[in-house]
Image 1 (tube, rainbow, N blue to C red):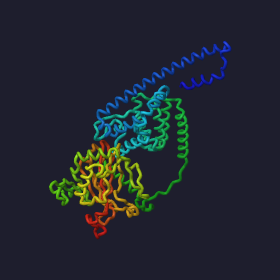
Image 2: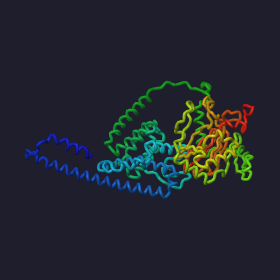
Image 3: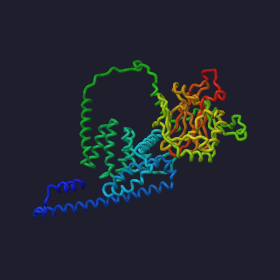
Image 4: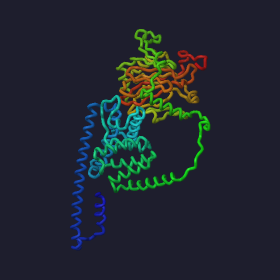
Length: 534
C-alpha cells in the first residue's frame, strides 16, 4: 500500500526541477513535505508492527523448540510432529524470511546468510514429501482428516493439534501435486479452523478458499466451487482472481445446464451377455494387491483359523553345535511357503553399534528398474539405507555369522548387510526381493536372491509391519527379532507368493537390517529338486 505513494513522489522529482527559483513553487512543497512526513510515520508504524510480528515468531520458534527438546523422540516419531518440524523449517521459515526482508530486515539477513550455508535445511521437496507421507498414512490407516488434525493418532500420546495454517500448507502441497482428492478435505479443515481462529480478514488463509474452490472444481463440483468463491468475495470483495473465477464458474454451470436440457436419445439396455469377458489386467491386479496391502497393514485380514491352528512355536538349532547350547525361540508365521520369525537373535549392543555406524552413511533407498535393471529412487519406497560389512564394525561380523548358522546358507555370495531407516510415513509397497526380469536374472553373477533375512532393530509403536499380500501373513516389528523365508522355489523359479510390503510407519522409528542370499554357492545347501512344480 505504501509503494504507490513513494513511486509518485520519486516520479514527481524531474518534473519539478528548479522549484527553488520561484516562491510559488516552494509553497507547493509545503504540502509535499506533509505527505513525506505522513508516509514516514506509516513506514515506522509498519516497521514496528513487523518487529512485533518477528518477536512473536521468535517466541513461537523458541516455544516449539523447547517442546521438541523435552520430548525429541516423541515428536520425531509422531508423523504430525515430524511434519510440523519440516513445515517450520520450510513454509514457516520462508514466511519469516519474507517478513524480515520487507525492508530493514534485508540488511540484517545479508550478515547472517553465510551462517545458514552449512545447515542442512529441508527444502520444498522435503515439505512435499512430508505432506505425501501424511496423506499416505490417512489412506492406509483410514484416518479421518478432522481427527488427524486434532492429533488423534493410534499409538501416539503426543496429542499435537494442527492450526489452520498447518492444514492450509498441507492442503496446498496436495494441490500442487495435483492430488485434489486429498487437497480438498485439508483445505476445508483449514478454512473451518481459520473461522474459529478469527484469521480470515487480511490473512493468507483467505487464499484457502481459492485453492479449495479450484480443488472442488477439479473434483467435478462446479456449483460448490462457485459458492466457495462467493464466500471469499464476502471476505475480500476486491479479490480479482475470485471475481474472475465467479464469471468462469457461472459460465460453465450455464453450459452444463444447456447440455442437460438437450434431449438425449434412448439407448438400448445391455446385459452381461453383451459384454466380452476380459481377464484382469496387471494394473488391476496390482491395484487389488495394494488394497490387500493396506487392509493387512490395518490388521483387517487375519489368517484363517485353519491356517493358524497349524502354526507353532518351538526352539531351533539347525544342527549347529553352538545353537544346541542356546536354541533360538522360533515362531511359524506361515507354512507354505515357510516363513519363520526368530526371537532375540540380535543383542542391544549390536543394534546400537550398527545403527551408529550406518547413520552417517544413510542414502535414499533405491529400486531396480524392471526394464533397464538400473537403480533409481521411487515414491513407493520411502526410506534411507546404508550397506555395511565386517570392516565397518565387528558387530556386523557377529550378526552375519549368526544368520549363516540359523539359515545354513553361505555368506560367500550373500550381499552386504543393508541397514534401513524409515522416515515420516516410510514404507515400501508390495514387491518381490528376487529379480522378476529373466534377462536381468540370467546376467547376475551370483544368481538370483534365493532367500531373505530381516533383522528388526526397533519396536514400532504403530504401523511398520511387514505383510505378505498373497498369503495374509503379518510380521510386527519387535526389537531383536528376525524374519526368514526363501524367495525361490526349489527348482530356482521365483515364488510369487513371497511378495511382501513394508507398511507405513504411523508412530515411531523403524530400523531393519536385511541380508540377501544368492543361488550360487548354495547348490548343495538347498539342492534343486527334480520335480518342476515343487
